[in-house]
Amino acid sequence: MIFDYFRLAFRSLRGRSVRTWLTMIGIFIGITAVVSLVSLGNGLQDSINKEFDKMGKNRIMITPGSGQFGPEGGEMSVGKMTVEDLEAVRKVKGVDVASGVISKMAKVQFKDETEFTSAWGFDTDKNGDELIRRTSFFDVAEGRQLKNGDLYKAVIGYNVAYDMFKKDLRIGNTIVIEGKEFKIIGIQKKAGNPMYDNLVRIPLEVAREIYAMPDEISTIFSLSIESEPPADVAERITRALRRFRNVKEGEEDFSVQTAEQMINSLNVILNVVTIFVAGIAGISLVVGGIGIMNTMYTTVLERTREIGIMKAIGAKNGQVMLLFLAESGILGLAGGFVGIVLGVIISKAGEFVAVQMGASFFKSSVTFTLIFGALMFSFFVGMASGILPARQASVMPPVEALRK
Image 1 (cartoon, rainbow, N blue to C red):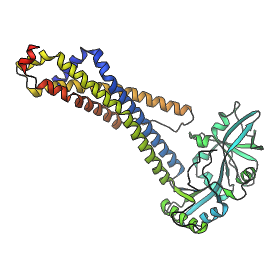
Image 2 (cartoon, rainbow, N blue to C red; image 1 turned 90 degrees about the vertical axis):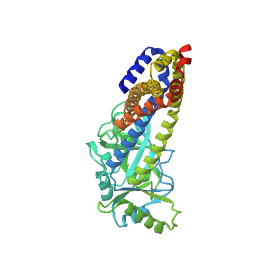
Image 3 (cartoon, one colour; image 1 turned 135 degrees about the vertical axis):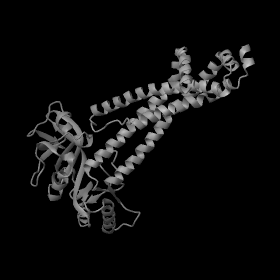
Image 4 (cartoon, rainbow, N blue to C red; image 1 turned 60 degrees about the vertical axis):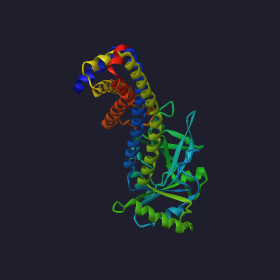
């Protein structure tokens, strides 16, 4: 019986193909926007989570000031932190490795070309070596890592080597960083993350000389002992730095964040943005629903005599109502299907563009739940939009309907 309702509804819609397609425009535009935006948002969230997993969940980052990445110059934070702070962190129970880094934007020259990119000064002592060894983003594909005793040597990211300059850089080439010549001794593997692929790593003591920072460091990277919960170690570091820097709780001039905290903060922001943007896109679904309602009212007027005949031969109010509800539901469902196809195409196009721009870690996320939910939602919008016209048709007296 239900199948018959949908068969009759489909036949009716096929007879008004132009109006049907025009009615579905609002629905499939809305579904296209929702599917593409949600899949891109979820994909970005999943990709970032995977990147943090690669870094290790026992990673703790200590930065001065707010602890957020600065908008100018690509520097990681504002404020001041010194080697004395680093020594205080190393003494905290549960800290396995702690190393200081200087991070700045640098003018990099190769022959007659000049580019600007991030330069990080890494300590080449035991702690620095261990930090590099445990971070897969810093693995080298060619050459070697920085070692103790290296001075004007550099390890460059994949993009710096192969994309930044007209001619590819090779091991043994000389580049000029902030007026100082450096010999390339290593080229990192492609990480798929622009932060690491566009990076130039130099010895910390040379970075101090170039940027006139004799005792200052930009960030302290720490790894907790595997048996210790990173959150507990981070809390101990916070207490230790409060005592060392002589600041009260709530007035800290530094920030201590675990990888898990950073992931959670990013996820909250991405969820809010995704929901907000998808909600805006959902407005077009309301417009599409109004379009379906308008079309169904027109259909009821056009088929008044048909309704009268159906009721005259025994069709009940509920049966007439179901027939028109099936028709509006099909409109929503068909619009949703077209919207899903277009949404998936757009999300994959967005993924392709991101990869071409260097973010090869990014993948859009098109899940069965998203597709099924979008289909059911579009069907529900269609059905809901057809309720009032369907009710009008169902309560129409057969005698009056036959007169028209």
